[in-house]
Amino acid sequence: MTETPPSATRRFRGRATGLAVTGTALVLAVPFAATAEAGQAPAASADPVSVLKFTAKERKDALAYWTPARIKAVGKSVDLGPTGPKAKPWRGPTLKTVGRLFFVNARGADTWCTATAVKSANKSALMTAAHCVRRGSSPVNTNFSMVFVPAYSKGKQPYGAFAVRSAATPRSWETDSTNDMATLVVDAGKDGRKLTDVVGGRAVAFNRPVGGTISALGYSATRPQLGEELLRCVGKAKKKDGGQAIPCDMTGGSSGGPWFADFNATTGRGTLVSVNSSLDSMTPTEMQGEVFGATAKKVYDRAQRG
Image (cartoon, rainbow, N blue to C red; front, top):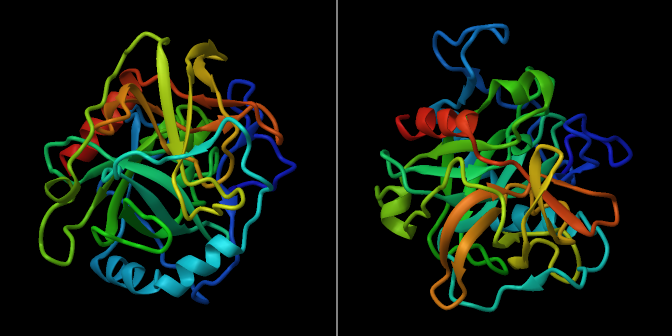
């Protein structure tokens, strides 16, 4: 799902390729407009966090929009080639906190990313990539009709779907395509239960030194999975262009997927230390992610109070 054409490159710290892929445009004639947080200052302000909010009607319409048929169609609309040797289908316990994040992008095309439910004060937060929320360096180009489906697998939605009511990103992403991470807040499910009461939430580590073995997961738009199954890459993290990188060949659709440190493959538990952000090339061998520092903590804190 890319917010720029495949031939374009994102302008952040030398990274080659963003991870979102555009699906088939199966959208309403007039996109919903995401509204800025009340009192939000202009981009030039000192506020390091930018927040989008969606109305109750927009959230209701988003849930109605993402029918099983539409979800199936968007997966079939994108084929980014065969799944690479580094990305393996996840065969461990169900990862209830990890799911597909469906939305309509700023150009009106159906698409998806990957996101993770995290521990939060409001029990309603999830983390993903900023480019799954809005186009970098373009304040007006925001995504809409956003719905999170935890533990999605082959059309199954075992814990239901949760409409996104707000999305916090670094203002530096909005203005300069840096700090590609976001924290979203979702409504309660149909039964009135909050997200992490239903699926749990992973702990998030900020200011963690780069290194150690990382498990990165995502719903890559490569075949045969085409976003229907969760894939995992495992590798040692290293510093790269101000961020971090691991060996991985997942591609579009895995955007925003979790990087877990201290991941236990038996229990499926780990600590979130980054998210899938960008690739080293169009035929990837390396996945890159941000180092969650002070800016990421401010974004997370703003969202978890929302």
